[in-house]
Image (tube, rainbow, N blue to C red):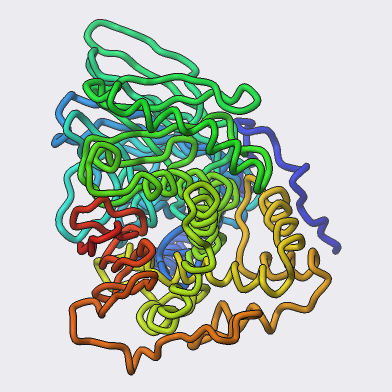
Length: 560
């Protein structure tokens, strides 16, 4: 017997009836019936266990056996950001295996009920998995719809990084790297992207904004419901919902691109000088890598102290204090705006296939951040790369090579956001440009975001494309830069030296820093500004002069 391989074209439309598994013929004799009962008793279902897709850094993140096509999220906000939201999550998925059970990533909320294809289903917890057992097994190659009614609790203990961010007037989301599943049930891994529809109901007087474009607003009595929908698939870690007493500021970007910024109403005028910079920044990025990849863009200025900024798809999250404080130079803030904007291409449109591929996202965002600072503010790129080269061996010793970061400390999963995947990874891109030339490098960058748009891609894909574009065998060259314990010699810069971690000065906390040098502070997990000390801890974004995870601000050492 020859089996015909399934193809994408053979998939029925979402919502179409899916084939049920064939039922066995009824046993017609008492003896056979007794035998069947005996077999059932001895072949009891194995205990539920947490699963994963094999990610080296997050072994239990994501789940095998299905491919999510769309999420429909519905949140009802009471007006108090310390109380759980009432929520309904509907998942449309295509099975890729025969499934007796379906594991979803979900922790922290309370599950009220689960339905599979409209029928009640049993459910239980295993680790941070919600394990759903449908009445009938799900056959390979069929559509299924899973509806979970649950709460979404915005209050966490000290052991949880990410999820809902409580602002002065409501909520926002920060789900990177592995926190979407404390907000809603999902397949919480960037390799499984899907379309999103998001509904938010809140008391009148609040404004809700989410990823994508608005499709509907309904007012009923004392509450208003907003609905948003994405036009491009999105990783769960990039989901964003803002609920607050906010003003939405609209403007138009390049080629008619609709832009919308979400700001605390009382700070609208104060923030406008920063908001109006976005159209020109988009034009600058388009000149480097091609057309903006999504349907809209904007900045969400959260009235909260998070210590990071985050590239949530189409609506990047920023601390308001980054723009209204006085401790950071203007050029630095603008370059950070470009960092999160660059992520819309690198990290959002082209998502990492695994979390070990994070360098492709953060390294590219750091590269364009540095390039923008060089071109617009006279901050020399070569000086920054030379400083990064000097610190590179220390970063590799502390956090692992760029493409093989060390496993995060338990309870500090955002510890993967270290300098080795920021300036350390940007240094890899600089070395590649030195090796293949700027013309081939620029072609590679454009081809990367074009070829993998709306998908996920990994390190091997990048190496293969670099070889294709340059016509060179680069596997050995890039392997040393991406996976080596020591930083290789810089092409064209033989005089550059990296400081041996064993011999680095330790007289001061975080090491001594001279102008134009970059250190990692106390083993910093973020990205240091040129000439300053990087911070410790974090979600891999930008410090704003407070105790901050991620990229440390000039003159500050972030500490989480």
